[in-house]
Length: 140
Image (cartoon, rainbow, N blue to C red; front, side):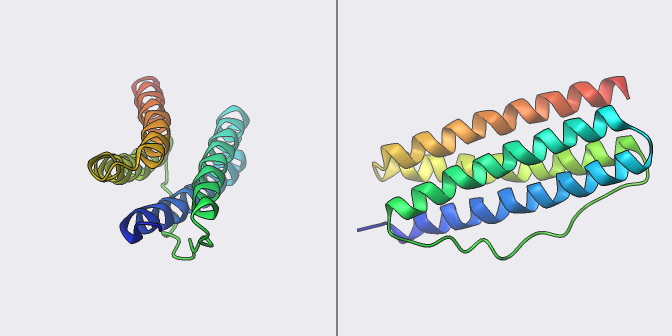
């Protein structure tokens, strides 16, 4: 029997990751229009990483016999400069960090070790992404 709260966390995670894919693809297109092809390529790689995260969360949902329902995507947040794009990306990643940390703590508390490990693994990826964004911001 699946814990409805864990399934809820997984659904929210899928929606968040798909929102991130949408955001990073939009930012990639925008930076390409600005002539920043290296940045655009990096943002496309970020979108692929987020898509991989969504896939991992969906796989876990299927383990529980539940179909994913990540249909509530957040609006794309763009900007008029690279600094604004980085700020929007950082906000998006911080939302994921808060969600995955909360989910991991809950999963550990109820003994859902595999779910906690999944949230913790992706949490580490998101923390690394924030570090990368911060490094880009200091050079922008």
